[in-house]
Length: 245
Image 1 (tube, rainbow, N blue to C red):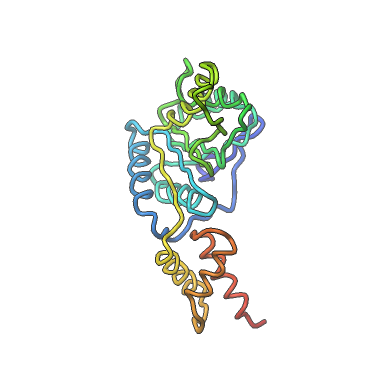
Image 2: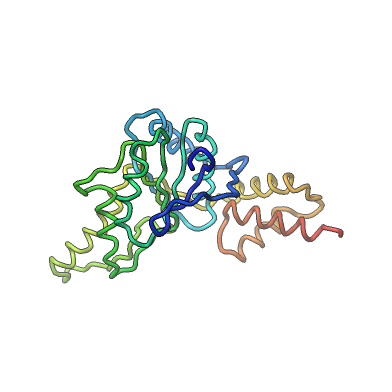
């Protein structure tokens, strides 16, 4: 299967190939994120120690795009991605048995991960990241994305909070600490946002006979953020606006 697919999905105890994989041609203003994650992935693909990775930040800032970029960049080095869709976290050990003797290297990918405040599943997840008696195979790392730096909602502790509450909150914080490489994704500066908009306008062949900065900023404000995704959506909107059937 891994000869035929760069991305597969783990669901209900089975692996299934994911067709239609497409990687971005270029990532703008993510130089540091690309550098750190690429070096870590290169270590994995070369058989050296590599760290579990955690990408955090708002929607549309490039987390999933960077995952696709890395898969595409390192697929010739034997990298494959297993997207984990199984509800039972402990079925990860069945997956380990399948991949541990494979010549390929793997991201075990959890997309948009989050737990509610009273969700005890986070303890299970924390144990499989690091802490279980059974170690994960050397040919894989966990790659997790989340909209928030803290994967599980936390209470606001006060001076009156008892020791049990504090220990509970410390346990939640320790989940974040299980990732050796945590990389943040942040909204673009306005000037960089406009440059990304111009890049996509050129990509889509949009006639630029309008006030790009004014219209792009107005469009972004309606979405509440300056992100690469919003920049691309604006360029798509202008293309549709100018389209003649």
